[in-house]
Image (cartoon, rainbow, N blue to C red; front, side, top):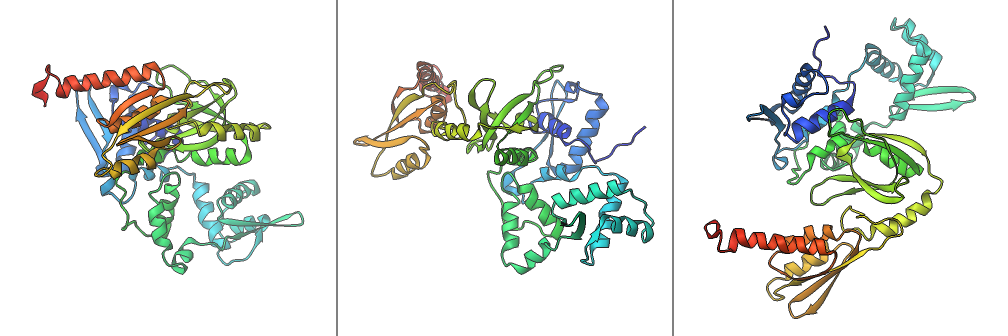
Length: 420
């Protein structure tokens, strides 16, 4: 019987377990129905070993809820990065890693045949040419090995670029690495560099650091590469139902968008099947696979640049490529003598909208957007200052007025005065 190991082979599977059980924290052991209960126990032990003191346990009628509880403002390094350092490896992987580095440490260049002969004669390790060639190719892609072609022969040498030398050479570079180790998208790279050179982030704490989205970092390079190469991609999303197998979708990626409210990241792209632009949350995507080159990419990109300026957030609404936008006007009252900060905030956060002074103490925000509902989520933060709402859709306006009535009943109405 195979024993438990903290190392993993399939990171996509681990992402799904961490996401469903330990980040959202709404499932219990009995809800795990995809494989055996022992599989859940193994995954739970792995997460506990990565997160150490950041696990939370809550008991309910359904059972024990296990979740991750972290105050990002009080820790210097994202503990979820540990999941990226848990990939399993074979005996040959670890042998070749150290032996090839040791052979090439003298700075000389060698052919594949010279490397395999050295492994056999000096280290008494017998590897076939293809195994060594594959490892050299992998290291060349990662920048560890430099490849030179002379005629038909490939020569290999150790890359002279060393991060520890750069950190010693350039003053302030270590501080920059510490800062960007907690930045979105590629923070795990900064964290890896710090681990490699033996430094820790002792300078920066980020109060509103959306750490859970670091599990999506594995998807970002593939998306950016597809954008650079003007390729379509195939995505598969996580399923919500037990026996449902999600269908694959083809999209042509244009940009990665980030919500300033939740930190969630989205792929914005063109969907050939529906012939419209749409967005997909990265935390709901299971994997991404590169597809074919899009011959019409430049035209679609031009259309996207026009359309994205009609998005207040990340939603393209129900608009198809030939549809219309919805105009909405919201008027705010502001004490111009005492509340200049409110005017500054309107100007700072208006995005694609226009803010104009329309009267004494009155400022009107006008926007032509695909989804006016996104503006209303933001406008509700100005409750008490909203004078009127015009345009948008009747459904959006009714929802806003109904919300105000509900709030009045709860906090200011005669029915629930005890709440005040």
